Length: 289
Ligand SMILES: [Zn+2]
Figure 1 (cartoon, rainbow, N blue to C red):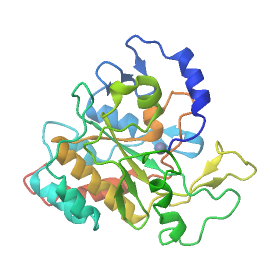
Figure 2 (figure 1 turned 180 degrees about the vertical axis):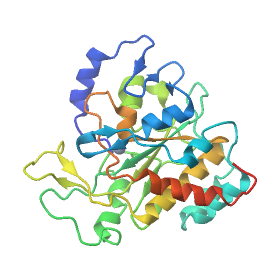
Figure 3 (figure 1 turned 30 degrees about the vertical axis):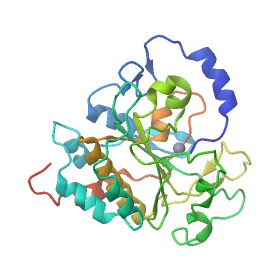
């Protein structure tokens, strides 16, 4: 999520962000094309590096299914889209069916959404208290109230909120252009709005031993539940189908990598588990991808 150190970042960026075309951050975002550097596979490899404790980023192999989807011109088929819709829980499934043929978000210049950004909420925050024993069923952890009631801002901070038992709430429908990273909000500005879709995945945090500031926190292991991987994959296939192409998966931390005070979410994200769930959904269609 994104709620700390905004003021200091604004000051820092005022001195570091030139107005001319240049590549921004570790994955080299181009402010003219609103695209990271390289082919879709190369972009995904940079954006899906493993994000460790204190935002330590390490390369990892791109799962074969993602390499396959992001290579060539094949787009999600109707059968894949239906498989994704069928995987959604109610009431989100009915909501998603209502918008199934609506266009995906675009920037004001008409550039369509291309990046599917995975976050962890880093909430609820437990401070020095231990994490509850059963994260996936805990009422406080999985409540959407704080995301709905203005605790973190006047409007929901992301398109989608995803609880640990797989419940989905759309803070903003996917056709709505909405920003949730420093790259979009403070470096590129309004022209970036609509290029990124944002998924907040519920995962609590607490202080690292010996620390009492929000710059030194950690999440539980495993970080995400099985239901969250399944729904993340369904959301990815569904949003890609609406975009008419395979979106490029990304993470909040890697989108902002190289920008001061970049967030460290998502923590403990297992790329292979996400990929396995995508594989199940796309295998419904033997003709593709
Ligand atoms: Zn985030």
